[in-house]
Length: 76
Image (cartoon, rainbow, N blue to C red; front, side):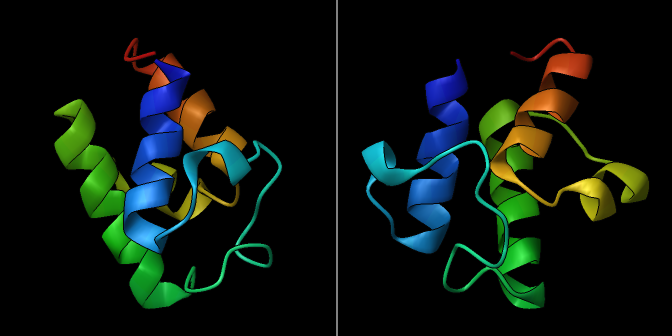
């Protein structure tokens, strides 16, 4: 299931899935700015058929954060 998270990042930011690491932050991914963040949130919600609340959306500052949030929702 973790691969699905990496696939979302790969799709949104046009990266190779094998290059994505849990520790990546907006500083490590070109295009992860405010607009990229909104695209990421939308893609996560679509891929995992969920809705992220504002606190979760703002709290995403790394790939690992996405996994933690989705795990907390029982989606990973």
